Length: 85
Image (cartoon, rainbow, N blue to C red; front, side):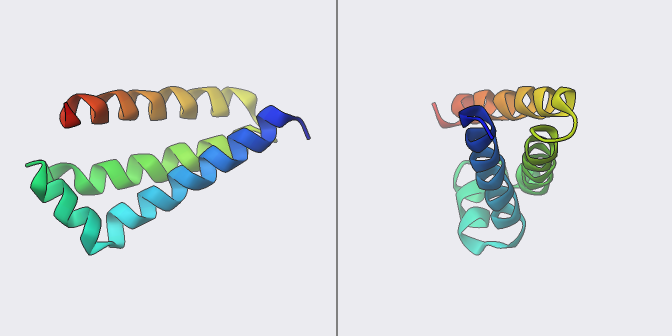
């Protein structure tokens, strides 16, 4: 297992945790309400879970899946930065 595999697994796990917390945490609901985008809470959580799973599965089985997941998560993070600025 290489360093990139370990980092991909860690990143995928973190995104998976964040996605689940978006769907089930009242704190995350409050944060999305605070930023005025509560309609995107479930979409964001679902995309985070899918991206995290793509990274976890892709780093061992299908590298193209990891690439697609990483690109999708990068886009989500870019949009999150735009919302917060």
